[in-house]
Length: 509
Image (cartoon, rainbow, N blue to C red; front, side):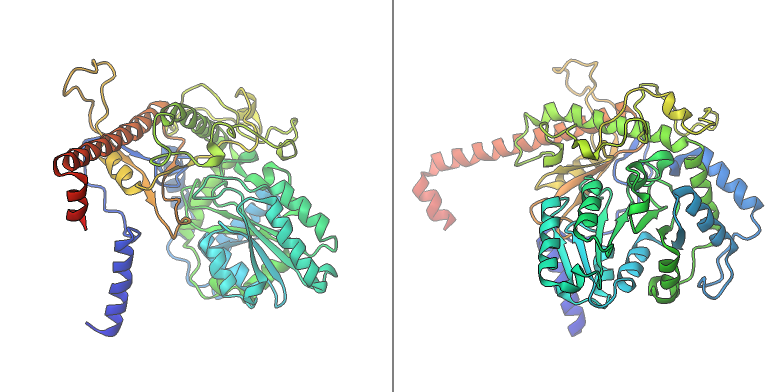
């Protein structure tokens, strides 16, 4: 084995030992059992929408070009890409738009090129890895890359105050401060305090040299009017320097768009290496993105999102009573979903009541895959037909289950056999059909040490019954783990009783 092979193998073995080695998911074997997906980012279930599928196929049949893209957009004319960018400027009420191959490419392209020498990037400690890669590739020194505690406005303000005390050029507006946050964080399901951050930046940097960049990857399609995201939900479009919206999650397509000024767009065309030196998205991909945005524009997303957020509230409220019987050292919800915090809201964070941007809950069941369901035809019609409003921050489709044994829980759910509630508890062997419940175990370094979890992603295609099955599986796993612990303790006590404590300790030593 070569020296390189030895080093690579040693690194992988180290991750094996720490149970953090990453592997691609195994292809799902063909099974007659129901499969429930609680792991993908397909929040609106559009990847399984017959309506969207038919729309894409129809659009592809009528499009003049669908195969490939011909190369970099700087080499080949791309009318489909330009038309999409023009449409997105209008849809998001943005001065300019630039389509990237992915959100990762957009973040690395922006943060590696736009901040100038002497500028500062203040970033949330949980910001996406793509922002870190962009910052590392930038021309900024390490002391100009400053983290602040996750979603902590006081920590953000202290960090900015410290910079202003030591940097006259920042106070004078001769250098810039970029603030990097995500509207909805992908591993925690938490929302950035955007209003407070915007107001802090405007107050503390009155020269106008503070620039807020919001990654809306996980809020696109779910929040805001027509799914325009949290920035639009809060009416902050004109006070945010750049917004990133991705197409590969709730929209069931691929690619991303960076919304910013015309000057920054022109700069990115010249300096963003992740845009310049790559083949553009295929024309077929652009066609698919357009069809996804049709689903947002016609009100479909608002209806699906209403059901999705209702499921989130239902899941947390139904799971909590069970968690009271489970040791928090084995399984718990994160602090922001603890019972004392659920539903709490800062008044200044609430949208104006006459602007019901958020989806409204409905108790009406519907088939999200139906090609015949009549959807709202006029703006706002879908909202008016629905009932009670969510507080802000709203529920999140991302719900982490914190546990030191995420792989054990995830594996258990993959082959879960739910009990038949119509059977007596004393009836042996009375089981419903086994169900495959897909969830994703998450380990450090993806999340901070000590916060391993199973990341649950709810979808608009789920039903309350699907969520009940997930909860039943979670509870069954915790019961099994507690029983295993009790059994091992009884075995240990029996062994010590037979051997005597001194003999047992000598044997162990």
